[in-house]
Image (cartoon, one colour):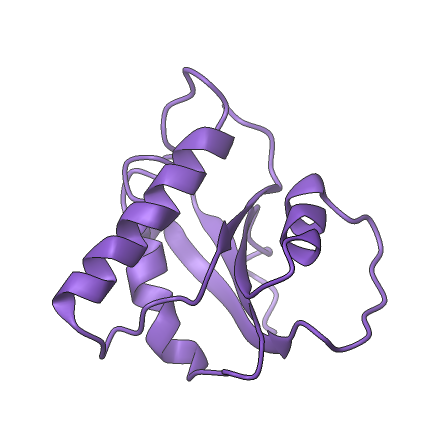
Length: 135
């Protein structure tokens, strides 16, 4: 079972759930390819509850946060988790990549995104919070 948290960066602008079918398909392929490359070799998809954090770091082109989530969640099925119903909690954000950030515990994936020089999506999968504690 892979250690969590696990993260990956996908370079480029995410496809919106409202975008064209061909654009969503291309984006889902890009997400799946990046996830497969970063997922530990020979590790099966998770079959437990997870928290997904998805942040789009844009360059002058923000988009609606909720519209980017579903294509990304779907692209990770069979790679990171066996079904997207494993996501019991989600955090999503949109940030201008040119903004100043305070970063603690910078992962290699996130560092790669920031040094890419363009827009990117950071996907982080973690253990979910205790169900008994309300947010």
